[in-house]
Image 1 (cartoon, rainbow, N blue to C red):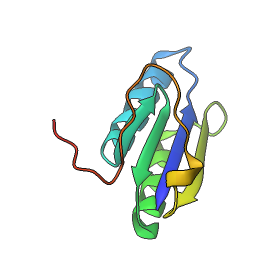
Image 2 (image 1 turned 60 degrees about the vertical axis):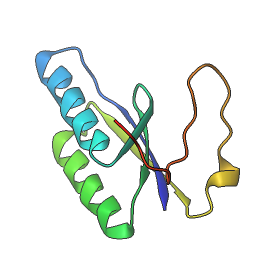
Image 3 (image 1 turned 90 degrees about the horizontal axis):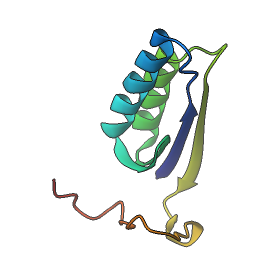
Image 4 (image 1 turned 30 degrees about the horizontal axis):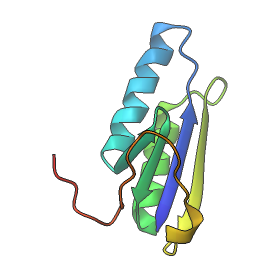
Length: 96
C-alpha cells in the first residue's frame, strides 16, 4: 500500500535538528522524498508499523508532529501532481 508520511520537527535547538536528520534518514530507507518533509512509501502493514515505531521513538511528542496517510493499493487515481518537480511511479525501479 502507498503510505504518505509527513513530519514537522521543532529545530530550534541542536537536539531538534538531530531528530529531523534521523527521521529523514529513516524515511529515505523506506520511500521517496516528494517534498522537504513528505515521503511516499510503498509498505506492507508490518513495514508500516515498524517504521511508525522507529519514527515515534525518535520524535519528541511534546515538540514534533508525525502523520501517516494510508492511500492503499489503488493510489494512482488519488494523486495529482502539478509544478516543477518531476513525478515518478512508486512501483517502477529507482536507478541511482
